[in-house]
Length: 488
Image 1 (cartoon, one colour):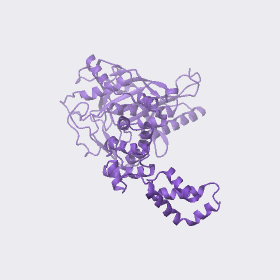
Image 2 (spheres, rainbow, N blue to C red; image 1 turned 90 degrees about the vertical axis):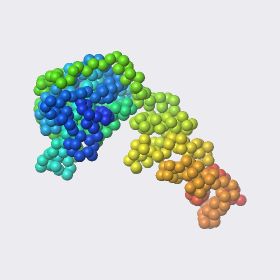
Image 3 (tube, rainbow, N blue to C red; image 1 turned 180 degrees about the vertical axis):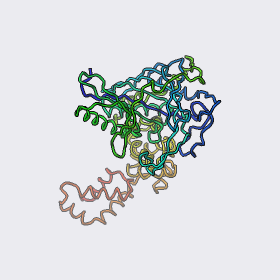
Image 4 (cartoon, rainbow, N blue to C red; image 1 turned 45 degrees about the horizontal axis):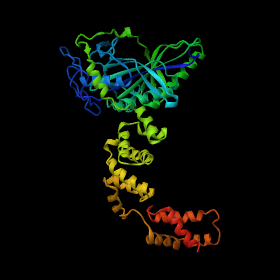
């Protein structure tokens, strides 16, 4: 039994699938940056006399996702027409699935292993995307626009709608759920999960429980295009409903729009029920019948699931949960790390360098790991030199920049840096120490007259020698030579 005034959250998540063509026609799904209304045809525009044909790849991707969620796959499903009028819907109906979805049940984990919570999945079904309204205002907002235009390029792009049970209790849990689902579809290779581009869109249903713990009136919140926006919108909506109930007001069942700039939700229309859409089976599409062999083929294609992979990284490579989380956020990063391990890299050192230096370069260049120039083999050559002490951390960072910029091996980068061996030792190091001491005579005199009880001045001199050697000297050797000279 839930306590009174407790938030209850359920999510409806639309995932655009990474297919080359639309759900029911051969038009391209690559609508980002395309000239408006060029990726269209009579089928996706719903012109008279046209017949839709189901995209096999979209069915494969949806079945694969359902299996990864532990859902029960329906071997015989059907498509319905969901009727409503809106300018971005050229047919005045959307082809979707209603009472016989592709997948039913399943679950998705949130939280870490020690406090994991499994959120049940209600259903997963296939449907086509709608077109897109382009508003005239510079900021792209409807409220500031004089007019809106319609681009149908997106219309017909394959979607999976994944609906959770109302079992999420906080905005942070909702954020974690969406983050996990995004991670999953990326690992499966079925979607890029980019919320900012609209590849993954979230609608949240939220209510507060009544005096006896019963579910309250449900409000739907839309237009949340980032994880942070989702969390903020839910935090605001919970507070708004609590204030309304505190004043003795009734919560209206409605759809509300999240205004990210103002940080508020605004009422847009009354919430529809299923009967408002007048669902009926699409007469142009026969039932979608799948064989058990087809389903098992998709099961065999499932990769190691990201939460299992993260636990394995922690268990096998002794990584922290934070490190493992970063390395398993994207499948490309996880694969790069595992290739480094197979090349013999120290797991902790490889994780640290990927988290800091590799991720920094990816962010600065705004590229994916797949476009990263430095192969795991070359990268591990550098890590091996650090591991053996042949290259200091300071020099390694300089070499890393050269290796990335020019796609060099560590030996080629060392030659460019002017040090084939990568180390300054022996007489060369003694010359550097003497050069620094000559320049810092005052500091030497202070040390030799006992004015360095805490050893800070010696550390200062050691740092100057390391700078002089560009990090190619061993700090312990530098301190040893300094002691020999200063303590004579």
